[in-house]
Length: 253
Image 1 (cartoon, rainbow, N blue to C red):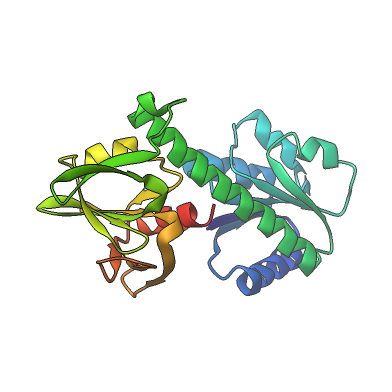
Image 2 (image 1 turned 180 degrees about the vertical axis):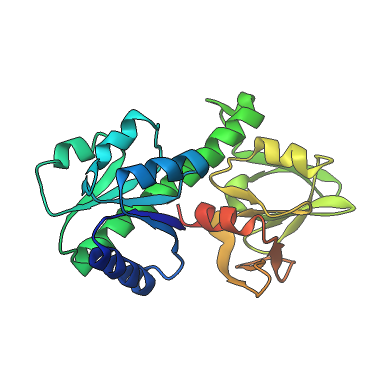
């Protein structure tokens, strides 16, 4: 989390940095700016931070003047000794309005709002990207049953009863009771296309898992995840470091 602080009182800026270090150690303070002029120069030369802490009355003017020059999109937590600007603050991406001296509980609450907003934005971005890549999924109905092969016969099974699809020369379908069948489809892409993405997750090139079948998961030092399913012929399902954050948001909806 990259943070920018716009504050002309050095003691307040130092206090805020100490509190952030204790409350949100993952926060990286990019810079502390003491005036509107310095802030204008910074935004001309740098990309927006993830989160902006901003005083309102600075040594050379009102920080709202920045919005006359820049279309600032990042969330802003205002910190000021005055409450007269509260309404205006929430018109320019303000997510909270803290009165000085900053109270630790108020700061924790404000950061909680930021984290919730960040999580919702990430999920929304993934959904929009999915729809952009697969526009046919908009408003579509997903299958509830699947035809599989078992003892030279075709039988229907409920997708709600499936814990895992995995590829091993052919596509196997494993149900919650531990039964294993062969899917009629030839590729996992074909399987994925008929599944509800809220219920099933493409763990990698060879596996798709059902959310209701996840018993637990753990990570390692590389950032990979290892998912244990309640009933499966596969002991663990590995999820790459790149897909691990997506899986965590998917399982925690």
